[in-house]
Length: 163
Image 1 (tube, rainbow, N blue to C red):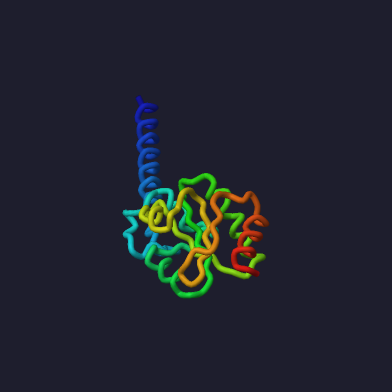
Image 2 (cartoon, rainbow, N blue to C red):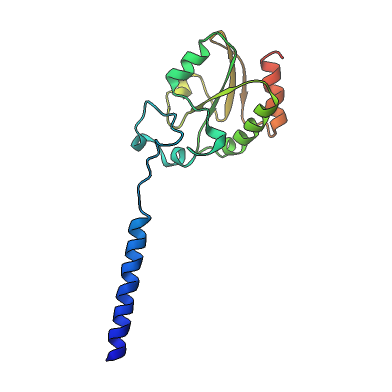
């Protein structure tokens, strides 16, 4: 009988420790504390795939559609990268684009078409990823799909910008 009480107490202690551990590690993270470019959306409106990439260094140039429109119409040459966090081709291409940006003198604005579905029609996007070069508010050149290498992005960007 003494062993049953002993094992019962040990079991109760284990259950309490597991419960405390789960409770302590179940804090809800405020995703707006770090990089949060979706200023026109509440965090609970974002998809899980987008939330998972908020801290990824390859996706730190995201803008809202209104911000993209303003950038495109600024009169200066600008690359806009349309992508989706659920697109496997984007997951492969985006790090290559980031690598290409280290070699090419330029910036890229990103627009997440999963969060902003109107962008498909607004910008005539047929597939992701799509990289478009705009100048004076007009599309100059477009690259659809993954070029397969950072050099492929570099070549496109250099040719599109006329450098």
